[in-house]
Image (cartoon, rainbow, N blue to C red; front, side, top):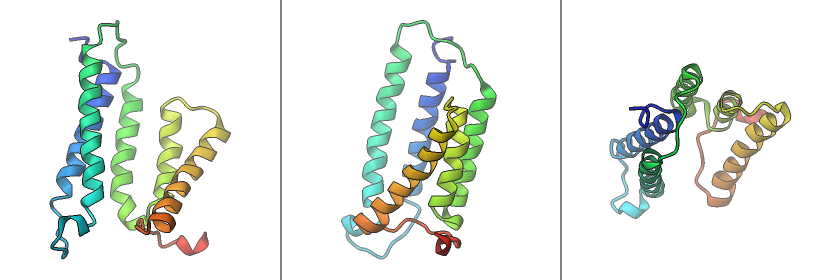
Amino acid sequence: MQRFANERVVVQFGLLILAVALYASTFQQSFSASDLAQSPMFFPRIILTLWIGLAVVALIQTVRTQETQSPIASWPRIGVVIVAALIYTNVIGSEGFFLPSVVFALICLPAFGVRNPLLVAVFAILVPGALVFLFNHTLGMPLPTSRFTYVF
C-alpha cells in the first residue's frame, strides 16, 4: 500500500484526473465551425491528449519504481495547491489569464519549496507574460483578458 500512498503517485494521479477532466470539458462547448480543424478546441485537444498520455506513462513509471518511497510529507501543501488550482481555473475566465496566473504562481511556487523571493517574483511574472505574448501576439490566439488590462 505504501507504493500507492506517496506524494509522487498522488500528484501524478491528480495531473491525470485534471487532464481527463479538461479534455472532457472540450466536448461540452459548441462552436459554429463545421470543420474540426477550424474549431478553437482543436489544438487544446491535441495538447490534452499528449498530457493524458504523458501522465499515464509517468503514473505507471512511478508505481512500478522499486525504490523506497517516502510517504506524503505535507497534506496541507497538497490541499493548498488543489484549492489554488480550483480557484484559478474558475477565475481565469472572468479575470483574464495574466493576473490569476501570477497569483497562482505566487501561491504554488512557495508550496513546492521555491523560497527565493526574487526567483518567485521573476518566474510568476515572466512565464505568464511570455505566454500572453506568445498566444496573443505571435500565434494570434487571444487568451482571456482582464477588466484591468488597460493598466498594463
